[in-house]
Amino acid sequence: MSKKRKWDDDYVRYWFTCATEADGTQRPQCVLCNSVFSNTDLRPSKLSDHFNRQHGGIAGHDLSGLKPVPTPSDKRETLKALGVASHEDALLQASYQFAYLCAKEKNPHTIAEKLVKPCALEIAQIVLGPDAQKKLQQVPLSDDVIHSRIDEMSQDILQQVLEDIKTSPLKVGIQLAETTDMGDCSQLMAFVRYIKEKEIIEEFLFCEPLQLTMKGKDVFSLFRGFFLKHKIALDVCGSVCTDGASSVLGEGSEFVACVKKEVPHIVVTHCLLNPHALVTKTLPTKLRNALFIVMRVVNFIKSRAPNHRLFQAFFEEIGIEYSVLLFHTEMRWLSRGQMLTHIFEMYEEINQFLHHQSSNLIDGFEDKEFKVHLAYLADLFKHLNELSASLQRTGMNTVSAREKLSALVRKFPFWQKRIEKRNFTNFPFLEEITVSDNEGVCIAPDVSWHLQELSSFLHGYFSVGALDEASKWILDPFLFNLDFIDDGYLMKNDLAELRASGQILMEFETMKLEDFWCYNFSERQFGKIYNFKFKHLHFHSKTIKALNIKDQGKTNSREHSMKSHNPFLPITLFFSALTSFVPPISNMFILSTYGSFYLSALEVIY
Image (cartoon, rainbow, N blue to C red):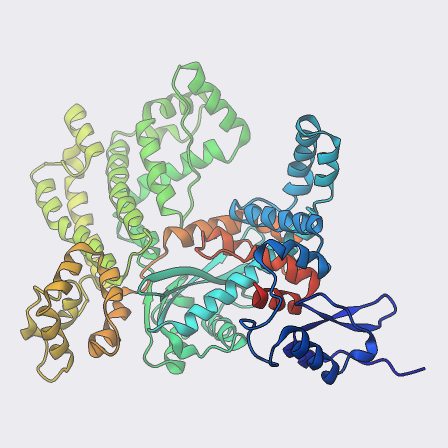
């Protein structure tokens, strides 16, 4: 008995694939005419002879001169000849498509098997009949299947992002956020900002667990390990914006020291939103006590289910639409601002409820001074909320963020002068009390003092206006006084040349700042400007995208932990990030079933 020949991947150059029989015998099959040969023909001379005689080709060349080449209308026939049945294709593609939508909508993996598929089967039987129901029954939608599909698509998207990072014309910006999920697992999340086709792109990069300790060196090790794993040099990073405990990720932390030692040129900043949690440090004693009373009232109502139900029933009884009280937490400052507003707006109703429950909180809550302090706190945090919301918009950068923060701080002196004159225009809730009860006079000194302290605190913590005077040309290169730039800097020549272009001036007037700097500049045209500008367009704080992902990760962490092979990596976060990347589903279901060669062969043919 003759020895069976083995398939060699080099035979692909003759446009053959390997057809394996049930007993393991390998036979060559031409992907151009679908002819199948015996195992004895599995040799270069035989394959080359068929390729040259039947298709008029030269090994390794493209298909432009080959014959016969299937037309697009023959595609389904070729797929069948390759062993890909159209019905099976549809089932697999439907499975991938559902997994993609499931991840995009942030639904648990079990929803397909427990809800969607049973509903689809019932609808198919009623509307289309039993035959359609039988076809739908074959679509694989188990939770494990959905998980594997999402994982596969996530990895594909990650590879696309990594390729973009490698080809970015400028160094990329990284945002790191340390968070804790519902299982008390500390996680490090990373987002990346880079340039692609003259546009700034923001994408989710990774989410990894901090295993044992949460020191700065542990964060750096995880951060560095990700880039080493994917064979990307760490010096591709131009800036890092950190969000978390200052001892772990702050400007004086061990993490920053490690990063700057590894990448000396990197610019490290701390999130501009995170220090909002420290605003209470500047509150005088009376205002701090008022905030403490509010916390106790909210916890009294919300933390006990009977009180919460009674509170809701009480509002319905007195004919007032029930308004939800938010939980108080130390770090959710947007929620805290809304909570203070709700408490002030429902002050009388909450007061009645506390009386009805005979709560010992009633004494502090009924105090006239407390209501005045509550009004000021509600107004103050409303201003801070508006600032925070504006800083979280997609596309915000260091320059525009510092401008917004500086604008708020510059208003404080004007507010102080108005307060000293008993003018509370900038504090609507406080003004309302002053007009109705004439109670605002007593708080004026405290408000004035607090605004002064808050201004000093923000200046010291954020370095408001710290953008170097000689660097402010990035805001407006046409009106900037070039005398601020030292004559020794060659960048001054590029700026002078730029200002002479009328076309560039028109683009500057019609485009957003970051789009303008990305659109029409290359290293060859304005080299010095090109190498300088992007570090000021990097991350400054958590964006809406980052906040949504962090919240979603906390909400769904238990579901993912039960169904994911890696319980610390919520793989749907790639899709929760509202990524602009779309996985190639049409290729994935072929690749997952029939291997990479089939996919490469089809790509070449069509």
